[in-house]
Structures are given as structure tokens and as C-alpha cells.
Length: 185
Image (cartoon, rainbow, N blue to C red):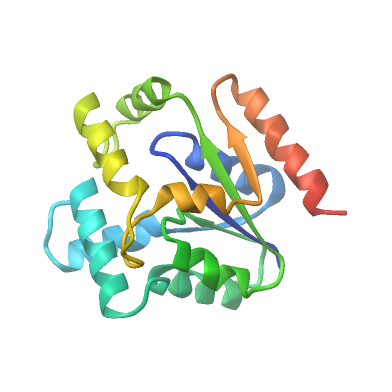
């Protein structure tokens, strides 16, 4: 069983990588976003990025910095198939997954304006925001000394492979294929 963790900046293409791995390589997807949306709805909160950050940080603070990922990993382990866990946002989540065999962390990034245009087009419940809010969200999630809060800059630094999604889908797919040529020997 291979576990692929995915981290990266907002709108960089994490979901595109997930779709590719599901469709081309039959991976099963375990989503932090999906996990948090269920929890947000249980708490009768609005589903938006602020609620996601608040609930995720609360769960990590109450339990441990890798709590959400730990639960998703347990689901993946019970299933036994190659799995994608998306989106890794704290160093503690990486530390937990590094204790597992066959774990690889992919990070993805792209130009900020391109990323904003992507989220504007996808129009999910967390994406209907201004460019200023987009950059404020990213700043908030990029660095923290609190192990229960997002620290994308450290997560990206800890990645086994960093992909850049500034071009075509075909170019991104080639990068993914190159990674898997290194992983599966």
C-alpha cells in the first residue's frame, strides 16, 4: 500500500493531482476538506475557509497536531488500497505519516494570480472571496509556531517532491508520472 500525502498552496492543483491519481492509478482519496465539512455541519457552522481553519485547529488542539490525518490514515489502512491523503497542512501530520511505510509527500505550487483565478473559477463554498482575502488566507496558513495550526511553508519544505503547476495539465501530468517513475522502482 502506497500513501501519497499532498500539500501545497491554495488553488495550486491539489485536487487535479488527486483526480489524476484516482483515474490513472486507481488510488483512493481521503480528504481533509471532506472530513472538516462533516464536522462543521455537526457544529451548525457556515461552510467556509474560516470555519475550516477554526475547526481543524480546534480538533488538533483538543486531540493532537495530527488528529485529522491520523483518522484518515486509519480509514485508508482499513481499506488497504493505495491512498491519497489531501491536504496536509501541519508538520505534525507529516511526522505521523513519516512513521508509516511507503509514504511520500507531494507539494504543489503555482503563481498566485493563476491560483486565485483557478479558485475563482471553481467556485466551491470556500472560494467565493476577493484576491485580498485570498492572500490574507494564504499568509495566515503559511507560517505558525503553534503545532496545531497550519504551516504550509514547512510542509512544502518537507515534501519528497515539489510540483509546479504554471502551465498545462499535460505538463503537470508529466511531473506526476516522473514522480511515480521514481517511487515505483
